[in-house]
Length: 398
Image (cartoon, rainbow, N blue to C red; front, side, top):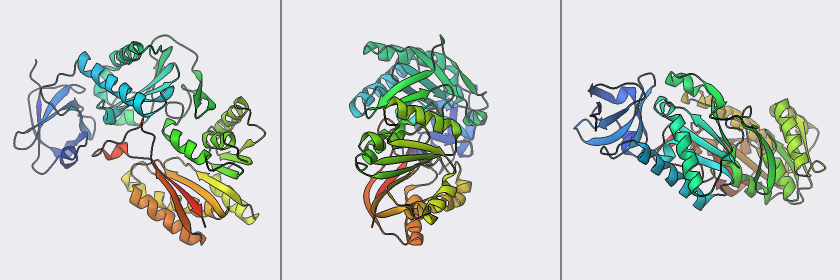
C-alpha cells in the first residue's frame, strides 16, 4: 500500500470528529507530512499521534478532510465502496419503501459527498466533494451492480451536481446524463399518491423524499377537513390530504412552474375536484385570508430553508415566527398546524422557541401532537449536525 500523507490535528481540535462527526476543518490542522493531491485520500492523526482514520482531502475547501473511515488500515478500493453501498441499500430495505427513496445520504452512510436518490427505475446522483467527484463514474457502476444483485434493474442515471456547494470545492457544476440518455420525466408512487418527477429540472434531485412519512402523518388528520397547504411546491402534502378524504384542499406556491406541476399531479390522481392550487406569495396571502375571516381545519407550512448559514439565523427566526403567527390566525379552534424547518442551522431549540413566540403573538395555545424529523432513508448520524436538518411539528390549536 502506498504510504499516505498525514494530517495532524492541533491540540484541542477535532472535537466534532471525536464526537462522531465526519469533517476536519482547515483551522484544525497543526501540520502535514508527506505528499498528496487534492481529491486524494490522506490519514488523520490526533496531536499525540493517535490514528483518527482517513478521508478525502481538498485544500480549496474550508472542510479540509471528509472522513471515509475510522480504521487507518482500510483501503478505499472497489470492495470498500461496494460494501458501503450494499450496507446503505440493506438498511433502506429494512426501514422504508424502496420504490423511491434516498439510497445514499453522504456522510450518514460513510460515503462523504455522495447523494443517490432512487425514483422507481431511475437514479439521480449528486456529488458535492472533489474526492467523490473523481470516482463518481465508478460509484455509479457499483450502485447499479449492488441493486442488480437484488434483481433491481436501473433504466438510467442522471447527475444533478449543479448547486453552489460545488463552487466551494473548486469543481464545476454539472447537470448531465451518466451513460445513455433516457426520458427524465418519471412517475413515482409514494403513500399511494402518484407524482410526476422531473429529475433534470426539478428542485434538488427532482422531489423532496425526506417528507414521505410526515406527509402520511398529516394525511391521517385530514379526513373531512378544509386544508391550506402553504409552499406546496408540486402538491405533495395537499395530495396526501386529498387522498385521505379531506373536504377541500388549497395549495399555494409562488412558483408558476410548481403550481402547474401540482395541478398535473392532482389530475394524475383524480383529485382535481378536491385539491386546487394557486400561485401567490404566502406571506401576503395569509394576512389577506385573516382579514376576510377565513378559517381552516388545517394549515401546513413547508417553506424553503430560511437560512443556509449561521450568519443569517436571526433573520430566519424572524421569518419563521412571522409565517407561523400568520398561519395560526386562520386556523379554527381545534384545528391543526403542521410546520417545519429544513435548515440544519435552525436547531430544534431555536425552532421551538420561534413557534412558541408566534403562538403568543397570535393569542393561540398549542397542544403538541407529534414531533417528527426526516424519513429514515435520510438517517441522522450523531455527531454530524448537518445530517439532522428537518424539524417537523404537528400541533392542535386550542
